[in-house]
Amino acid sequence: MSTALEKKMGAATRDAYGRTLAELGERNPKIVVIDGDLSKSTKTAFFGEKFPDRFFNFGIGEANMLGAASGLAANGLLPVCSSFACFITCKGYDQMRMAAAYSQMNVKIIASHGGISVGEDGVSQQSIEDFALTTSLPKFVVMNPADEISARALVTQALEEVQGPVYLRTGRPAAPIVHTPNQTFPFGKGVKLRDGKDAAIIATGLLVWEALEAHEELKQKGIFTSVIDVHTLKPMDQELIVSEAKATGAIVTAEEHSIYGGLGSIVSRILAEHAPTPQEYVAIQDTYAESGLPHELMKKYGLTSADIVKAVEKATKRKK
Image (cartoon, rainbow, N blue to C red):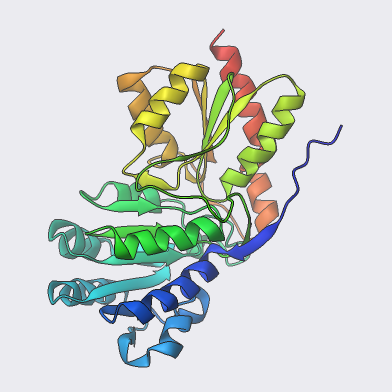
């Protein structure tokens, strides 16, 4: 029997971001956008074409860009900074720390090309440490949408509801649709997509779709899993994590990020304190990736539904 879900492809989350940003610019004249000479890739070009007087290209100067954004925020504007995730976090981290986080400036950092699904561009442009860096910044909100529906909602939430610094990762490839158009995304609350009694798969970004496929395959094996989309890593939905751990007795986290410092680490801290539970991790191990097609890289580095299935089977055996 086939376990395949009907896979409907949507836009890349970076495209959803760019179009939503342009729409938000129409109703909020305080939004200004700063890009690091990558607007066609980050999709801030949609905003720049509509509002050229509120769009600034800082070139290859991520640190300067973030410092300027904090200055704009201090003067009552709503700055949105975009570049590739690896560039803006690694090159601009000091400014993120001191100018945005420490000063609690209302700066929104929307970083594209997150993870290794960037593909052929190779390790210099693949961000596998951005969640670890940004979640460590006090009072920073960190988001990672799974599809175009959640991307639109979270970008709007970041700009209109959240006061203070935000880091939101978007992706390069088209993303499968995992949410219905009427899905709501209460701030800091995960979305439960499937119910199950044997284990809970807690996923973020592109790995949410892989988790749904794993759910179907595991069901055929008599293993019933919950699937949770953790679209906001900070603040984490601690209540939902603890509830799922107690209900199922086994947890698997799945993320397109290093095994160190990302979703798995955050969840394990919560479990250790509130509900000790067998946990397995689907993540990039202690390595950089390489150049290749996105699906090839996801398979080679263990980020597929098959890897989630194996992790769930291992976690459920550990609880017996």
